[in-house]
Image (cartoon, rainbow, N blue to C red):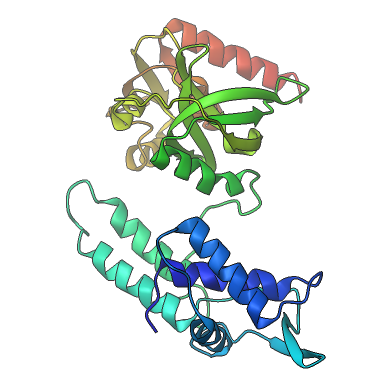
Length: 333
């Protein structure tokens, strides 16, 4: 069976109808629901007929589909369709043969870029995709990924991504850690960034005329507006190059940061640099590291993660800030 976006949309509509215990869906109702969704998605598609509807249902019931537990319940001379287990959903099932084959094909295409400059991420992505989608036939798991599946805000990834692609201005209700109540932000979204297992959206706050960085786990709601979208020519790789993390402080210049690490952690710092600009030298007193960045909160947290194994040599203001945070921390013990 040829599968395209319209077919996938129909399967989702049918799945939703089959799970709905508040209404009886006869085949005519299912056909109307599918065509309404198709016409809304693509007014020129023309919809489907009865034959295609039953072909879709047969495919969903097959092992090549999702083997859905569909029941036909008699109601007079007609029958309505409903899952035997209304907690069932095709979205909660392992990949079917069709989906697995499509992902395998995509992985084959992506793998062609392996080893190519600027595509180093492919080497990490391929085993992740194969493991996550169950494409490796292995009895026990052989690879794990550092992620937080319970992280709040993951549901906003798709609408935010679509808003960037479609250039939509958003009204975001945001609850930061300082305010007691959520407040509205009008954002022209430009870029999604993951850091330390959290997702962030960056965009223009037109009222304040500067780039805002919002954590997705602090977003309460997202709504599109009719405001005119203001595009940007920001090179995001260049934007993030001079910082550690995602926060770019306003009005702060790039500085040379000099750190001295104890010998026991030196191998870790060498093999996992703090920043791409890192220069290091092994000395008798330890490992001297120099990076050129704009100091921010994330850099402070990285330094503090090494606790007594690192000393800030310069600049003086960063050294004093780290020392103050360490003193405050010691008072809590």
